[in-house]
Image (tube, rainbow, N blue to C red; front, side, top):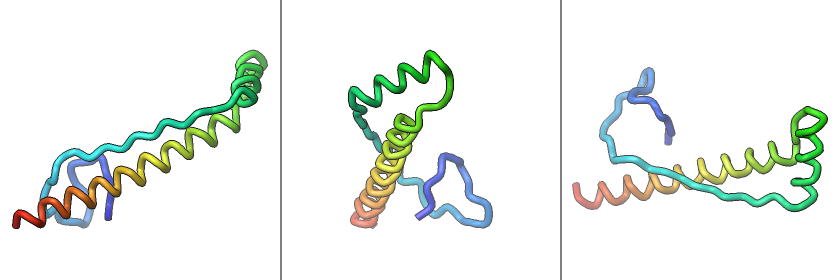
Length: 80
């Protein structure tokens, strides 16, 4: 399955628009990540701990989007 935010995909024919699907992910950091991120804010630099948490959240959200898209496709195929 191709997931995209664009109205077209080069080289592919869109057979149907099934609606909007979304995915959400909330991840929590712990006190140590917060502490070190605060220090990074003061001295500058990137917080690898928060970047990893954001990466995990994005992966979870994309997986949820794919699952919701598959469910939407199944729902539409029941009405064909």
